[in-house]
Image (cartoon, rainbow, N blue to C red; front, side, top):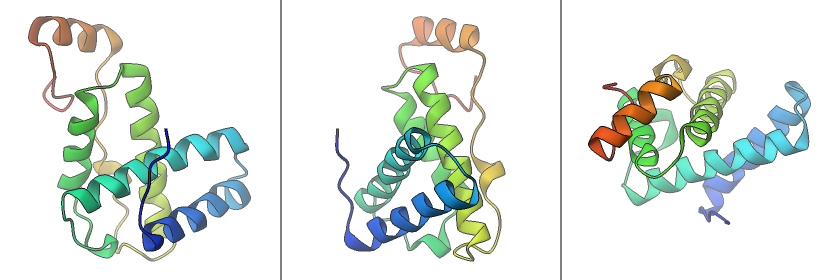
Length: 129
């Protein structure tokens, strides 16, 4: 599935992809996967009328993770949070944000607790497990 973002957000993704390939020497498949989740995050921010990236707040990361967790598996959510952490480190390293927000990305519970919680309650907030 293709995630569409505006030209400004796509420019950020392009620079991020270069950073991941050149600076971090990641494989193209990893870069493509992480870029997909970064685009989803940027598209979600646009849909929810968030301020510009330099004003990104930690709560947005939690809200996005909860939003995505409602529909995705644990394995996929691990990719989501890993991609967000990488993107937050990039934003800080490139001077877009004034602090490193990678530690603000929520950690996921273990597979067992996630599965048990989802079966008991339908949809779970990964932050509260």
